[in-house]
Length: 210
Image 1 (tube, rainbow, N blue to C red):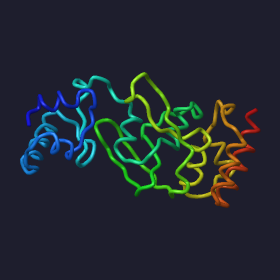
Image 2 (tube, rainbow, N blue to C red):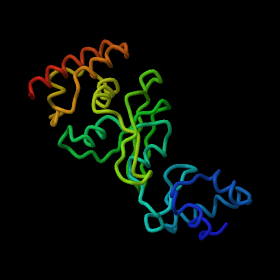
Image 3 (cartoon, rainbow, N blue to C red):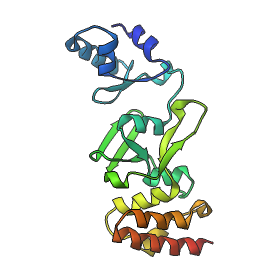
Image 4 (cartoon, rainbow, N blue to C red):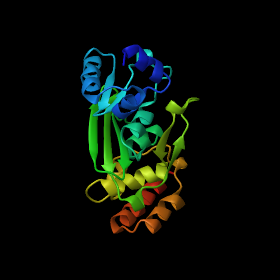
């Protein structure tokens, strides 16, 4: 296995795992792993997490969007919380941390491509997301919560009550994209008294912005 062979195999699909290499190249894992470590140290590969790598931007046929990387790094997952609010221009702040929701354990990775945090959510609450097209290439697209579900996830996954004062602190903007009926629907399908109280307070805040 030579580095040129890696470039040829993955330039159009910059992500790969150790298992992919062992399938493509008939070499012993004990010989492959040290070589990968050397290439990471030399800047020829980017290690996203244990066993997951990507080519440096210089060798990528198409630079993947950070949200696409997030989906790949820990699956199943979708972009949500404050990252989704920023994407939909619902908050004025820029969020440096990419936040996502997963049915797996909570995890965090600091990578050369950014900081990725995954919040664990029960399987029956893992919904309300869709594939958003952010470019004309598959690596530009990602699973993202709807604006309403991002707010629901914030209410569910943050400690404490989401009262009127707390929702006001988000300084929500462009709220015309939010559908109150969709927000209330989540209180029906997700049995949570905390969520029901939080959504009632949120609706009150949304009425103030009109």
